[in-house]
Length: 525
Image (cartoon, rainbow, N blue to C red; front, side, top):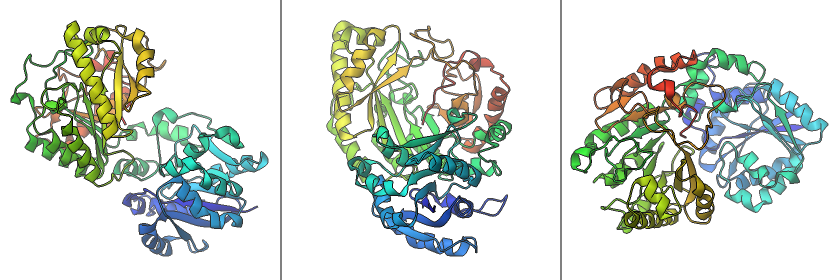
């Protein structure tokens, strides 16, 4: 029996080649060395974009272990699953099985690979993977004979080479394959941990977990929970402190009328965006918070400022009924062209995402949710739905029509989903948030976990109000805890100030607004 190790180098960042102080090895070099100890090892292939093959060949020549056979670097014509498998076809006859590993999986575990491989061979599987472990520890395995079959699948040409591309290809018709799974003794999927070095945050995370294996991962993680908060990945910026809808799920924070003072100064906002790009490097920037971002007179310019940074993506949540832009849908044609002209994102996300708050099927329920008269509700619901449809055509696979699920609209939940799954905007069901008790509890059901865990938003998010104030989180509407002001204090300092609140929650300490929070288990990107 022979097995090839196939390292995917698509999408890996420069952090893959940056040495760690603990052992002096980079993630790439570590992956090369570790995977050479996989069972029945017969050689290493690296599938890479054509424009990176030469630099990867040079790096391998300088850094691969001396006892490792020559590493072959193979170009893939496109960043799709089909192109990956087609690049492998000429080598499929050299081995019986292929280990599929990412080239920056610095903790790839040979012992776990041996365990999975034994199971794979015993049951003559075509595809084997591990479930419940952190990503990056255990490889995936495919039978070599499966490679040309996967390459010929029509849907494989549409699957991007993300970390999940292999499973995404198989799952389309999973019953057609002999599949085996190695189940983790302790399931940590809820932590969403990936030990790769694709981003600055991932590299920092990995720097604290040297020595982790598929055997000791559970205790390792339990002992190092304070390091699971490396950098903010999601920024909620209130560029407009006003909303034209008085929705019953929206906190009463804003004035009755809109004026320019409600808008964040664009020059100050530009500095914040540059700070985000320098500090987090990779992040999603939401321009909504509780306000209506499309009311900002410089909205298009703000969008451009974010898209100028290739590691940043933008999220806009809108009611779709603002008087200055939504009535002129050609404005959004121009925004769509701006996104098409922007450089492709280096991270896993699209340049832009849209959420349109619709919340109902009938105008009667829409009026009840947004506190509108019957006539006004009918007009605005039609406008919002037209807006969502138009955006869905301009920004494919990046637009959602959202219903915030409450007692008031629960009867229309299924009709809402069925209506929007047939349209250009996709349906999205959002849980109701009573904002730590500020609003009445309108939840049709309590979906919180049986056991509380530290808040995802303290771990991954930063909220910035339109005056620059950074509260503890989005739900701290009264700013009971002020971590700083983003106009005057570096984001790194502000983020460090939030660490003690996260550490309190690691010890099951939930104080202030956190005590009554129902959002700690929700997750933004």
